[in-house]
Length: 442
Image 1: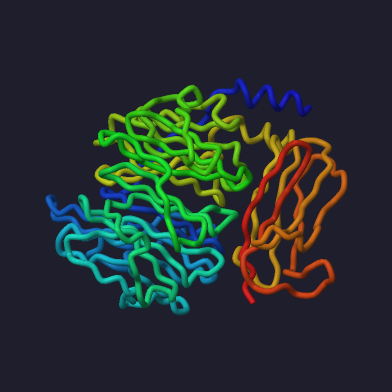
Image 2 (image 1 turned 180 degrees about the vertical axis):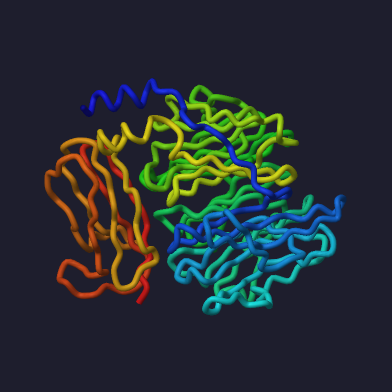
């Protein structure tokens, strides 16, 4: 039965494939509530030439209806506070008549605050905040990148945004992306735009070094890191393709033999399975479940999008893919309707190893880890702290095919409650291995 399932997966057509267009024109970013599968936040950008101003919106029904929370903004990125799902930070640009900076909004009960709390960054009206990153272990430490020709900076705060300082003095260029390693939070990378470079820090942004530079006619359009493979990084370079580094960015190889198109715009990694890649290009949107060895075309009609796609986001809770453009809107694809018929999937059971969900996350007092096994496997499920020390062994035995739920109450091996903070669950089954992070609130 298991072999039959694999054959169906490899050769079945993409059934029910249909992208849904949202009633959004200037798309900025989308964020999914970590504790509820029905709540999402949507940020749009402003278009000065068309006299349209961006906004922060919320949906409580998985996107069927949207309520506007705040108007007259130009939102490039949305981040949740790691320990509070009721606190949002926004990277806000300034294309005339909108305020720039890092803005913070807090949800009180069932009503949302009607005033912004500025996180403290004070910039001129010509400078826009394009990207932000919040330390998952110590959220008072945040990074913000500004975008301006020849004058952008990366800023750092260690007091929750009350004061900011230039994190990399002496270097000025538009900051496009800031990314913190999903397992090693002291490891941080940022990329620049007008002069395409990759900068890295191994000490929470105290010091930086340059470790890659591309030609001025190229542009780094995304960066992705792998939880389980230290030093492995993918970047997409617009109009060129995908580069890979296996040594923290010291050297790079063009990875185009593993890319369905040279016109890559953004690549993302499934947080539950690092062999699963999603790629947006100027041609279409693609998926690989074998680390780029083969790709499925999700057949996005790129002719509907002016200037191509810029953003790609995976909703791991509801198994949906979102593709967006700053100028042409937002589209979504329900991946539950793609691939094999769902009746076959239910009849044959799980078709792949996967941590399917950790809920709730952040958690207090306990959380549940759900995972699938497609065949008999020697399973190990272990909890580690941020230093890599094993603190709890939840599963260590042979298990048959199926779906499993394992609870963890934040206790260590001796049964005593551990300190609050970030922890990692590592699932190993046969040759499969996956690491996901959890936040324990105390």
